[in-house]
View (spheres, rainbow, N blue to C red):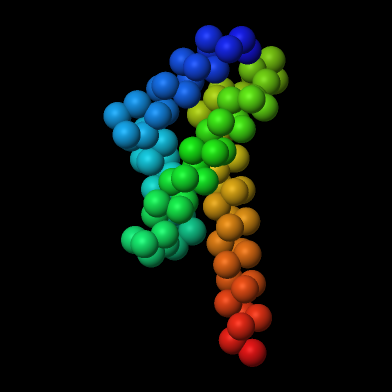
Length: 94
C-alpha cells in the first residue's frame, strides 16, 4: 500500500473528530464489559496509535479487509491494557 492509500484510510477513520474510530472502539469497550467514562480518552488515544500502526502493518495481499484487521488490533491492545491495569490493582490490593 502506498502513502496516498494510507493517508486515505487514516482520513476515513479520523474524520469528524475520529467518529468512525470512536464508534469501533466503543463497541469493543462494550464487549469487555465497559470502561469508566474517565478512561475513554486514554483508550481513544491508544486507538489512534493502533490505527497508525495498523495502516503501516496491514498487508492487503493476504485478503483480509482493513476494518476487520483494525478491529482485531484494537481488541488485542485494549485487552492488554485492561489486563495490565487489573494486574497492578491486584498487586496493590495485597
